[in-house]
Amino acid sequence: MSEIKAIIVDDEQHCIDALKTMLQKKCPEVNVIAGVNSVREAKGLIDEWQPDLVFLDVEMPHQNGFELLKQFDRIPFDVIFTTAFEQYALRAIKFNALDYLLKPFSIQELQEAVQKCRERRAARPKDSSAASPLEVFLANMKTLNQTHRKIALPTINGLVFMPVQNIVRCESTGNYTKIFFTDKKHLLVSRPLKEFEEMLSDMDFFRVHNSHLINLQQMQSYIQGEGGFALMTDGTQVEVSRRRKAEFLKRAMQF
Image (tube, rainbow, N blue to C red):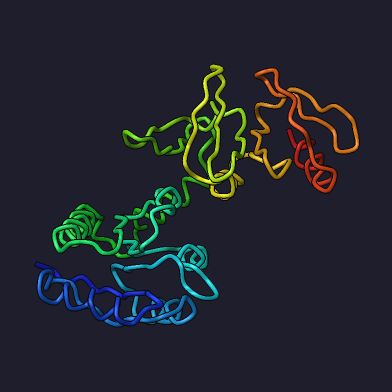
């Protein structure tokens, strides 16, 4: 059984110590090189040690776990998120995380996550210069045509995967987001609009108002006004805020 070099990134030292102990006892193939408390420390160690696996917390002071991943042009390691916050699962899916463990997680959950890492490593080309699954995913996200992209939407029964091109607009309703589709149907998701803005901003979506995120590919026309209105393919008119008008028109002119 080949060794898996790992780094733990968590702002709470007791969480690092507990995870390290669990790995030593139940996943001996995982060699924890170090445990660090910040994104800044983690970036330096990853560059130096080139780990196979990173156990990554989300909420940390100054910078979060997602901001760490964004610092890499090439990401040759797998990621297992370890967090007490359930609401970041959607963003983890975008980054093609190996697993998403909610604290406190069980030994069995940890072992299953490590097993996924072993399976990926076994399936990976032996050429060390080959891109990791996470790197391939991020590259594909930048180059794939929008019609090939899907988004995972959490429901009470699990995840629903919908083509991004089928989304007309997203509307904020407090801590929930109502998503409207080209077939006139809609889905209420228990995630704030900000999360969808972060996931979809590089897929031709624009937040025209505090309460509205629209798919620019699904916009038919623009109606002049103080801020104006975007007329969407489903017949709705979405208000454009005055302060976002200039940036919106700049983006809209690209289509």
